Image (tube, rainbow, N blue to C red):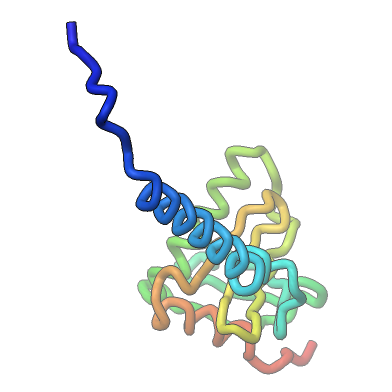
Length: 150
């Protein structure tokens, strides 16, 4: 049976310094989370667009303005694998939830550079910055493409 040594205790000063450092770290991360992290997604985006995507028989994907159905951009067959993969993943979520294709996707960009694609049917969001600038920029081209003429 182990015997306790009554003279062996944790020094009070390092213990208090450690707890203070922990409290400071939690306070700072909480503050920055509200200023520039998850809390920032509640601000209005600088640009946003509602889009629908359809597959053509030749393998191309057509991006259309949700409100008018006008063609915004065409992704040729065998190109833009990131766009195809992202849309495929979101479409799978719709199929699993037994939702149709009618609800548009919302593409939005904020002033701090974040770009997000949201499936308005399921509520799923894809933070496009997480996949690098090249992949994010493909979606940005959709966002800043000129308004199509009906």
